[in-house]
Length: 297
Length: 290
Ligand SMILES: [Zn+2]
Image (cartoon, each protein chain N blue to C red):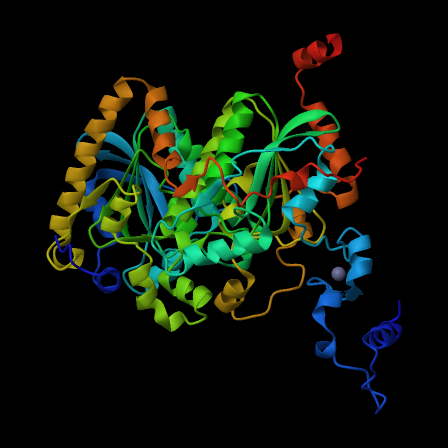
């Protein structure tokens, strides 16, 4: 769609055309709810078209954020997900003003009990433990519940000899939980260490945005690290770095492609191929004995 | 000890220009410190130094975050903000300590890992993550001491340990108070206010089960008597090494389990046997998958 056509359609849909002087309407006049503006290429698409494209920017292939539910839907076998620890909710470890009420609001608004869903599921028949973060809940910052659910999920996988697949997305630490948030980095990474020692497979899939304390802990510790195209992956915030070096950073800084080029991601996989790739990788990591048993069954 | 001091008062103390740094403490606490350079991959970060030394006759590996005492030193050590090479050097030396059955002593003092272009390119996040994971199962005792500032993941990368101590006025936080204020209130100048609500003093962290031990400083702060403060640090290390040596004798696995559990138990949540805030069934109705 040409840019001019695009705005014509918008005007038509809105049933009003303010451009008497022939100038096109300013972008800010368009209700944002109808449109998706790509943070990578700044291209604007109708939400409908964007949704039909699997929430992928049709212009640059940026893979936008999904809710945890949407992610599960396109990733695991129908009806196979059994959620762990659904009824766990956070307390307020440093008595941060307003934290309890903010959490209650978010629980009501998102239908989530915190920023991650964990559970057992199957991908093309393969049993896995799956971890999916949801950036709609406090930018999927890592507080006590996120840390505890992830740790328990990995411990469960270790005990049951299952592979772990973690779809990461996070703005970083949950500042409202203070130092307790920082300790979740140690907790989750410790669980990965034990899973490793037991010979378990862990695949980390970095989605938009994987940053801060999550990048500096379990997200970067996968045996295999996959990223979705064009997503943001980094440790320090872009603005913090720009403030430090006093210059603007290029658009592709801290992208999936940047991480691949610098050697911190194994592969970039498109959303519509993810399920297949994961299933293949899991099969390739099954030990021969397990395969034999499975074949004899 | 000055137990009544607020976090923001302590911030003033740890920012005192005469506050001793790792460079002051190492010669006072250890004998025969041999510095070892480089991560064997890319470079030698000056914000983290490390090497072998003798502590009261016991060989140890010392790993320390270094803040400068003047501008020149600060330029060399990047104001105590490590690059990935620093964390990777630390891990290399920790592995060496494991091989030769030496305890590791980490001195932590950083505003945080360096937020820069090169640091991102060389995997700052990965370097910190790997240290955290590898220190968790390191088969030798690890003691960490926060000397001044324990800033975020950049501090945690040297603070996954069997015993964590903090100097009396040290602060250990998930983000710097300035960063906290600028993110939460969009106003970095409210740093002191942030300081006082973040629960980041040694006493706070003992209550939150993160810090195991508080090391007293000289009256009014370590700068008033670095030698006294160094003696207090030595006394802690000595006692702690004996404790860990005892644990060690009961078996390596037990020590590593107890290190895991030290971090495993931190978290503040509740679980309802029946709750009306479930989102559950949503996941049963799935669309078709290929
Ligand atoms: Zn785009």
